[in-house]
Figure 1 (cartoon, rainbow, N blue to C red):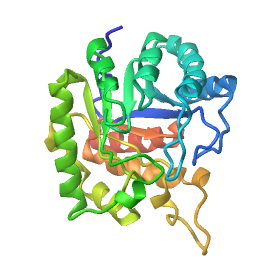
Figure 2 (cartoon, rainbow, N blue to C red):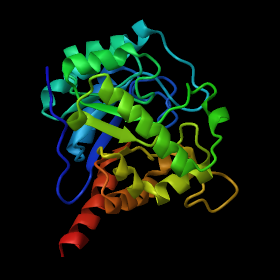
Figure 3 (cartoon, helix red, strand yellow):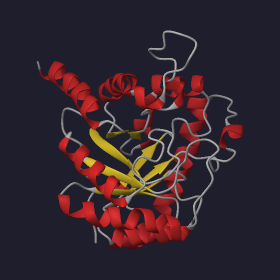
Figure 4 (tube, helix red, strand yellow):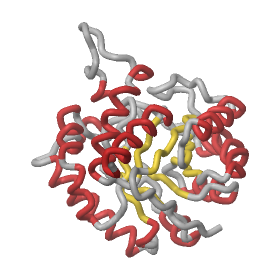
Length: 278
């Protein structure tokens, strides 16, 4: 099924709600591993205002191992199928061609590949043949060792260059230019200070000529925001910091923000919209 890329509202970014169907998510610790729980979570995100849902069956937290193809399929396909009839566009968060194809067949609209098609080159073929929208993230390797690859001469310039090269390769491989979104990959082979520098320069990513999605939600670089002692803020308590980041991203004009809590981020970006229209 051919699907157009969801259109960004005039006054705010799209809010993409995350549904992690994994036992080892950094943000919720496997709370939505059971299909019924994941489906209920998707409906709750929609009720909270999410414009689209991103369903994934593989944790990409630093150091995470990979499930088998069969296990990833078992986790995500029933959830995609159940939520595809809601009228909200569904994104499948996967690095595998087999999972991407099965999810598209089950009703997914978008393929969100954190490897940008590098982990499984067949995934790009699946996307191109389906003429599906694709979100391609800046990536330097799998979660098991990605933080060892956080070496940059200038993180902004290097990520811009590498993501631009990947954009060109994807377009050459047949991904449609009006259906390609780019993601700078906060937290993926990036240190905390590097993430902050990318956020400070996020508007520059529009120079790549594609819509921009950013996923900062609950990530480790936010763990000191709001901390009032020696202990870091737990992942599930980072939604206020995430909403503040969403304000910055809305002001920068990004296409979308990927978050675990849709309600707080939607309120934050609606404040930006209200001020801009006043």
